[in-house]
Image 1: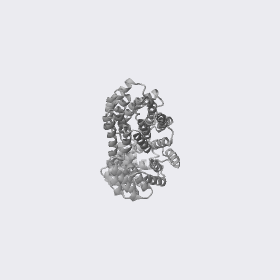
Image 2: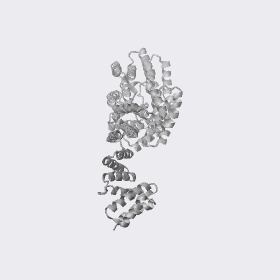
Image 3: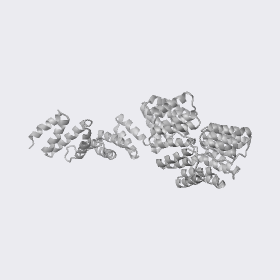
Image 4: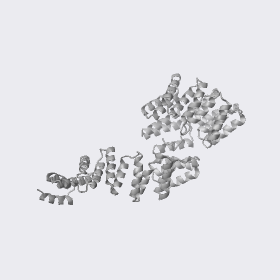
Length: 521
């Protein structure tokens, strides 16, 4: 999956001392936030002045991507007690994104207020792990302290394993997961984590094996099904991916948010029309997350509904904050502009995408295709070169580049491009045909026979489907017939011109060659 949608990464609620909160943690781990809130509400009725309970309520909202509601509960907790260290952690969480200085100050305040409370260290570590780009090293620092303070806490060990994994030390992460398994072999969250580790290493079979084990231990642990969906998505088994994601949604809270997540997953699985159906339904209900307009714009573009894509993109720009806009937004904006006739704006947007993310060099391909359609072949070739230099080019890209080179009389460059085509797909005839044409132009008098080996290879492969490749075969036979006339090989020349006549009866060049061959000695 890419960074377009930030799925909630619930890495397991940290274990707390209070026995009453175990059920809340159970629900939070399974992303059943409504049930988790009910558990805390019961506790608050019993102890309305308990500031820690206010933190847990706020943290549920935070994990469910509702920062404003989370802030309210954290502040209410501090009203109950200025010594609520966990509430300062909560305030740090909701502040960190827009004001890192304030966020850090709140984290520091939490630690100075309760320097020996392992829950505080765990809560801060939980934050660093749940970022869109987790801060593994920062999480290791605080979670190591939490685990040292409470050595029997298996959840802390799992979270510390996550921290090492995000700090690019998968071996330490695995060691901690196995340590937990040795003491609690029925815990589905451990198998989930091990599966994710293998998934990150692209070992999909072992990832699948561990996800399956986790489900055997507890089939209600919903996050595993989400990761199963990820796994099948990476395997390009989209039907199975969606099937797993539906299981995930059936277990966790049902809400507009989960429908939105599912629409996001449909988009990522390239089920654009299905995604649009769900997104439009949510939009009509007034779904408040502005990212819905981003997804609608992207999906409309992919279904070639460019005017709708433009309208949705405009709605997105009008609702989103500047710091929430990413390179992919500019990339799609640029592509939509180009498709709706706003050429100069499209180019500016695509250039902005590349400026923000050097990996977006695919935008140069959009430039290349745009300039080619406008007949500006020099600009098109320049953009293609930049795109291909990024290493992202495939068979079709080199094929298109080579054809534009041919049209621009850059036959040497075209030859190199078609060589790449042949390297990528040696079983296909078209690369040989175009490479023959490029070499034919490099050797217009056929004195060196540069095109000969490529036409011969084209005939070898193209003859397997002679009807489909008729025109190319006539071209190849004609070239070889002429080549052998020039080299005074009457027998070979006659062989190939006869093939022309057989393939294309009435071919004028073949009739002329026939007359000439009769005069040859």
